[in-house]
Image (cartoon, rainbow, N blue to C red; front, side, top):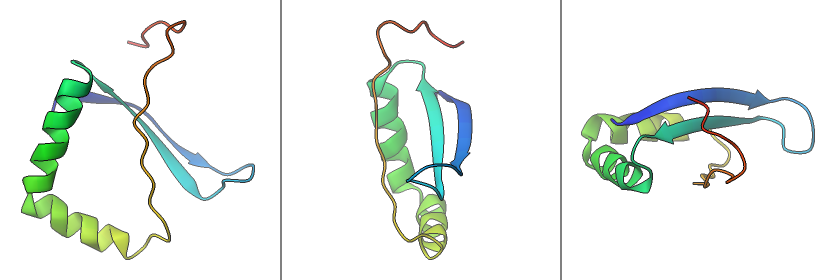
Amino acid sequence: MNCVSLGNFNVIVGFDTDQYIHIWCYDKGFNNLDTNLQTLRKSTEFQTLNKDVAKCLNNRHNQVLLPFSFWPDVY
């Protein structure tokens, strides 16, 4: 995959506790994100892992966000 994990955080303070935030950087932006998601959807290993993890979750929510134009790249 053409991405790098920039950080993973567990939220322990505030209203939305008990959540994890994962920040990924895709080297070619949304083109690589789309390609990676398609690859994962076709992977039987990922589908099996996803089903196993889903048993432990109350809720799952994903967001894809654009970087702020006033922040420089972090790498």
